[in-house]
Length: 222
View 1 (spheres, helix red, strand yellow):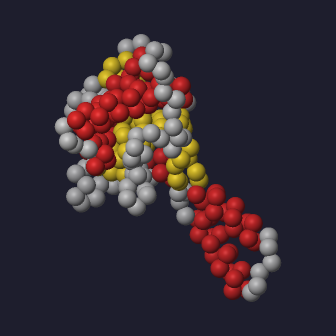
View 2 (cartoon, one colour):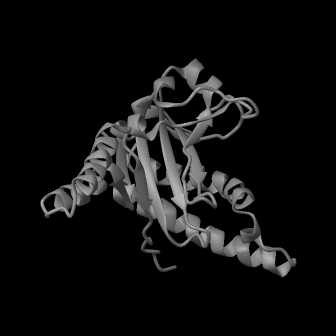
View 3 (tube, helix red, strand yellow):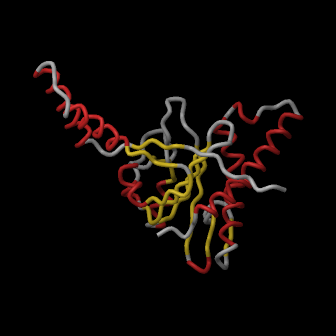
């Protein structure tokens, strides 16, 4: 069960958006565009994610701390004795989204909670996913050149996910619904029917794939 709520997520994200708009303007005053490099932008915004989500949590729980230094939890919730790792990401050029972490840290902790925020390029639409109790089983092995970073097996990790903002679409389920509709219609040939049956077999047996819908947040007035 999630100890974060959609209202907490909306509050934290709206504050992140206001901060983001301010620093985009500041960069512009010095002739720089923060949005030229989304990876760099997300690194700049990662501390804001920790601070504002910690602030939202502190409204409900005691002993909330945020400290992103190496070896420290991004957010620690004292009254729950919980550590929360914060990650900010955006879609790759291919359209895919990767949920990454440091495998060595996760292996040492054995089990961790993660808060992944997906932001669009303009930082106006978001998805917020809270994963509870992830282990190394939910992540891929380390690959050469990855510097210890590993991506999540979404078909495993999403079983432990609480969706706080935006949405997650089960692509397998969507495709199977299309196929069932097609199977209910007459086929022009046996070959065409076999092709659709093969698609059904593929989407029935392949690990679940997901796509994510990003939504705006309500920004409180100053």
